[in-house]
Length: 139
Image (cartoon, rainbow, N blue to C red; front, side, top):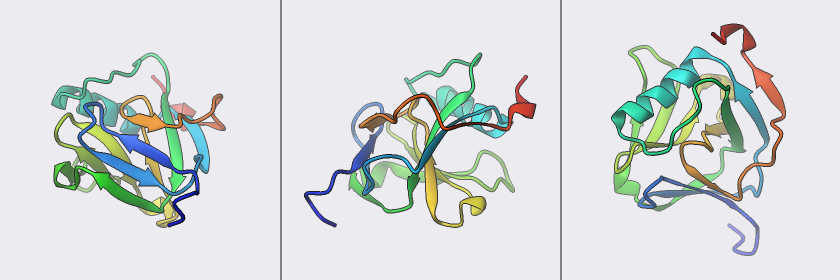
């Protein structure tokens, strides 16, 4: 990797785990209304994640090119699925249960998503989001 190239870091809430995406900005951003994203945020909170999201607003997502490396806390990172048969694989920092990134077969290994409200993303993604997703599942 080119050390002079800007990158994006994603750290857990307590700072013990950190990923680096080699792209300086997300490929795209969105607000998601799907049940899976809402449940992922609720699961993180019940496990002890200190960052909180508004359950009255869609979940903010930032999708980065799948060009990532672990900078710190590799031993704290674990893969989880919310439910048996679930397609999304979530990489979570077990020290504070911050979701670090998520992969899904539909992403075709091109991008992974992050939850900027549940982890520390720097630089933060620009607002407003590019799209609103799965609006039909919003309660």
